[in-house]
Image (tube, rainbow, N blue to C red):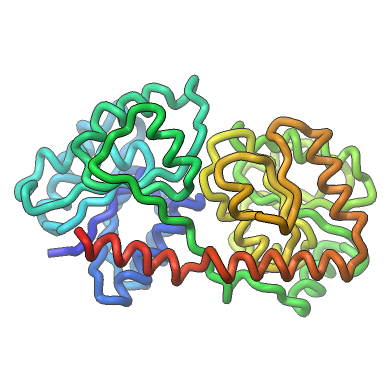
Length: 358
């Protein structure tokens, strides 16, 4: 019997997946047994989970319409594990967990949790999923949101679980930290001088992430160097002052080489891991006012309206114009904000208390 069985749509390289890996590994180390079921065949994070001693089951869901073919395997996994808590992740994982909760034996001895990672989602694309979530939410014991903005957004769209909880994402501040030696090393590899002001943008290509605003910003600031990282970025037409690296797995190392962490999200972002990781690495944040960006950034960097390239360019230019010493001081203040408020240890503590209470 497991304490918690997590159901997630896939184990790719996104922020939610990274959070699940860190959380499940840390909770297992505390004696709270964990299992993970991935509905889709993406398994980039599976090896990290298994290395931490967490059992992982990978199913073969190709689309929402094929859920009936995958559901029996999910039911078998839950019946075998007999978890005390069945924890869905993101819309598809939440709904699959709910169906399974009703189909599996022992429902009366099991709690159903959901995990929401987004805030103001584009309802033209996600409206049906949100309405479906609202319909089923009354049967959910606890909905965990990773942002206050996400909790408010989903409440306003009719989600009515027995309880809402907000647990911020937690950052590994030992992994994401200033590294002067690595800064020099990566800059040398990329052909970037020691005195250059470097802004880094880390995100998969998706309308939510609004790469167009970042690219427009860099066109306006030719003296600033840009690093663009994330799945699909290699297909973007970038100006000469931007290096496009595509999908990378050494994000902490790349962050160490930069001065500014940029997030241009247009909608949907709840708690931005990238912004918080960059801050933890000692970078000055420049972010759009989406999700909990203002709560994460505080006074350590500018937060501007989304979908406003001119405002974003002015904000980056403001930070780039600071002296190197002032940027360093601002970056250390940003790190201190993460260390004080948004550590991985705090997030694990919050989840452990939540799971123990139920």
